[in-house]
Image (cartoon, rainbow over all chains, first blue to last red):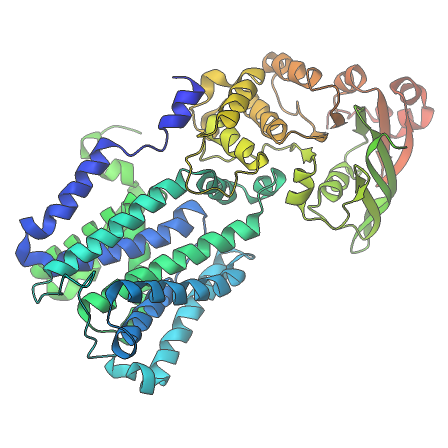
Length: 318
Length: 252
């Protein structure tokens, strides 16, 4: 294959990807009783995808990505409650607030080591959680923000009790983001992020404005995390302090590690595997599910994803 | 004077009490084939880092194409045509040579911030990539991950990346360092075939290559310029023999 052909086909959507998405979009019909779970997993997957953008592509570690998720959740809830119940407008507001927060925070992660970044991101999330707790007049404090009633999507599709609309709403938005990110990561901009991740010194030496690129991608990632948060608040009609929680930041990182970083599907696969593991193991042994999760993670990291997924190769030396 | 492409005046860099660059002035004319030599620790790499903007000088000025670039960030110096290669390969290990070059060329053509178009949509990028891959003998390995390439190929890619930025001045930091004899010829050919109007500054320990390639030389010792001249002058200079050639560790 010539260089030209190779370049032209490199970023194309594969057939299996289209097939998987068709299946995903059909899920609310195939499993109507699980619609609530479907939208929950979809939203987490979107959240994980937003983290993949900075972790997998730009190489920025974060243990506080819930800061942006939570910012989006509270803003979407507050906007719907006090200003306008239209869901799509609410999502734009959620993204805008989280994006601005991301742009400000990006200045804190440009320099320094991974440890610095972990601490800065962790700190911001803790700070916001305490702020939401303190501002109880606005946020409802520890009781959470209740009584959020959403208008119909596109002024037509009402949110129903079984979560059918919510599931399609979440899937639709996530598909939109996926398609957009698919294009982005295969663009010159996307490859320049990978260049920064792999070798920042060389990226500068070929003329990539490293800081500007990192600010842009961090802001976008934050806005998308805010989108996921907004979706969650809208589909559950509720926002509480745990949207900022450390658990949420850590879980989403785990999902990404399980599904694999730097290929966008990692977030989706990770979210499905994580949630499935959770429900299967906790049905079997409710109190000790984190033990088995921990064991799985240790195995995954020690053995490696490739080998773990190919049991038939275990006897052989790699 | 008007034909000077890159120059620095009275450049000084101190790290604490150590003076790594000691009042260095250089003038690189258009199309130069200039070698920068000196024993280990002479401050050659520090000088390159100052010129390219990785380090900020303690004192002194740098000019590129008649403009003062002393305070420009590194990536903007690249846009103005000052490009370097590295003594130790600095590649993007997760990418392939094709992706690396397509990304670098897009960047150079001002499309680096584009996010909606796929990499390699533009014909100009594709043509330039094909040309670079052929010129640097990388066509047959263009789809292997960079970290899987043989050392000689990695060295070629290192230089191809710099050429993809279309330099006016190219700083080559030991281009053949560590390359086994069998893969050396390929690399030397590409160095010899660099465009004539590009000014090349070569930092090299290999004296055969230096004397074959350079039309002028600067000898650095302990951060300062010891002497400058044609290869013949330098070879005949007893001080150079004493501090550098005479030490017998010219391949260090």
